[in-house]
Image (cartoon, rainbow over all chains, first blue to last red; front, side, top):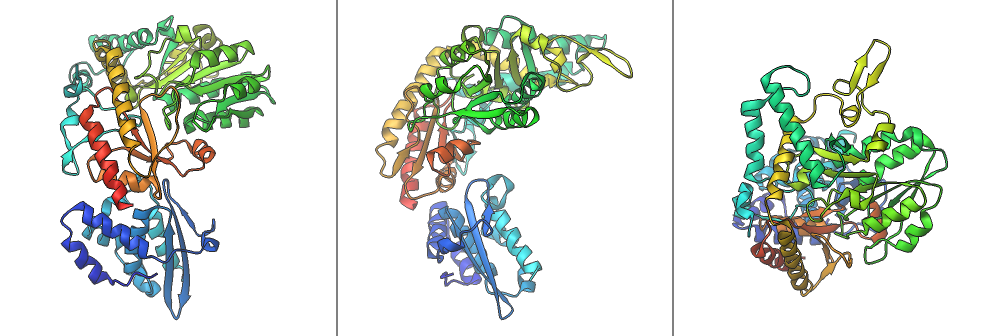
Length: 136
Length: 399
């Protein structure tokens, strides 16, 4: 992950947006800053199948902290993945388990992207991250 | 001539802007008269149909059966016995696939096409699994039209059934239904036409088409969800066994065996969607009062304008270039996922659908993950088209 922002900076940036355009341009840019997954990692095993777009997730446990890498074939989902990573990357399994990602998406006014009808794999991605944390 | 003001929802806002509703392929909005008809039924006539000997039941039965007669006339069926109410297109196809089980022999072919919606694929796959039949599919050209030579090659004496869509929900292709039915009849195959996307935009005359089955959903015709129609030729329906068992569909029941009603009731087990059937009747009555041919022509003109302008936008890629197109513009923006475009249009108050549109085999054939689909109805206007064009233009600046 190359996104250099921390969670507080992210929340502050979002608080300045007063129209959807700035917000979505920023989300798309966040996604562009993510280090793309190598094609070799875009395996069936790492694929989180969403109804509409595809998301891949890999993880490594290094010194008690979980390191995630995420990628998607859709710009906005990639950007929203970056938001998830900013909140959850390089933390202990316990900290990730305790994370309220729904609360974060609500605070950023992005909760609609987690609804089941979106079917964009974001909900499944969060569930997979929580599952990995619970079993690490 | 505009019928727009008859649809109250079109006056609402979405994302703080006036709503541009271009997801009519998924479902259409409802005119006030349909909403009122359902309301009035529940307020004044609610009762179970066909059984009770009281005034309310008589009224409810009469209202529901009048919906059936309106459907019969709307598609020019020979008899009202040929109109079976279902939950929608999907249930209608499942009904046919189930009652045909005894007729299909191992090794026979069930022919579909690469254009089909999953609901005109999966029930046939399940039928093939039950019977040992093979699924074959008519290929399409790169423009998104059926390859008629391939259809001719795949329709053989071994074809038990040919099921195809009248209009493609993903690309808008209008198929030459009458010619395809003739080809199927020449080899003795049964025919089922999926009319979900056609029923509002094309005049449908089942007698002229000559098909064995024609299916459609009410909700794509300004009627409520949960009601649809299976048309079947009367002689064929009489010869087929029932699907679901229960009340309404029986003539006489003992603890060990039953005799059944004749069509359509034989295929309508349980309390039907009475309000839905009444709503469907109201929608057809409403449509019968409109200058449909003029409205469809105006809709076609709007789509031509939209296509011409959209194709000027850098990065716009039209998906499917059928000669005969109905109400659908499917597209991609270079370098982006259809989901991105759908989200960016949604933020501008423009409702479209993005994804595979339950057309996964079609998208695989075209080598794309899906499309953005703007689908029109008779109430869309010039402003909708201008907003769509501006919205797509704006989306390209993000991607």
